[in-house]
Image (tube, rainbow, N blue to C red; front, side, top):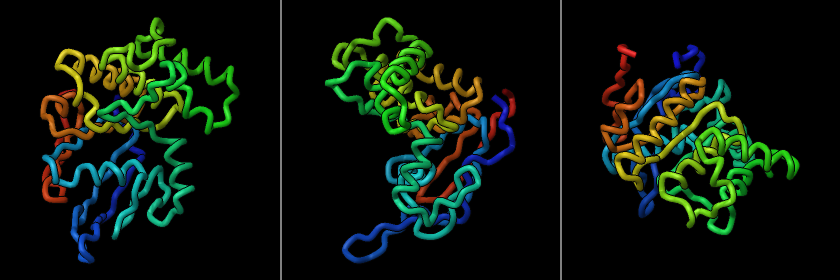
Length: 234
């Protein structure tokens, strides 16, 4: 999918520090970047590089110590927690390495869960969940609970859950980390298809092979962006 040119996420001179023993410990150091609608971006970096903190800022799970973060043109830097939660719920779908499914619920019930907070009726929730599971190839597993599904199937459920709220952006943190290489490739192909349909996709990973599935790779080290590469062959 070709990016539209309109920024969906913009960071301006962002710094983030945490307090340890009463002293500030810098994690991000003056990061500036723009992610545009329709992009497929991988954020790469080793453990301790600051990529998880950067992901939290992009996902509106945290706010910077200094600098500005804009989501769809709105400054989230000084938003209250309830406002951050509302904007997250309406614009961002999250996919995590450990799936974060509820074991006592079926696949469709897991997918329908975030729709409760969107005010959807029970029948609407079920229909949306069924339709979304079909999109990730799980029409025949809607009644199964997580412990009755393979790792790849569980991650498909997690992707369906992220898609159920029709987000503008999918943010995936090490989404293939618990999967074998073949299953991981299948999951990455789903992200590629979603991007082709117009979704903005941001992957956070330490794995070069995973990052290669994206059209743009941002490398972060010691809290700074050290390279930003666009694949112009695609």
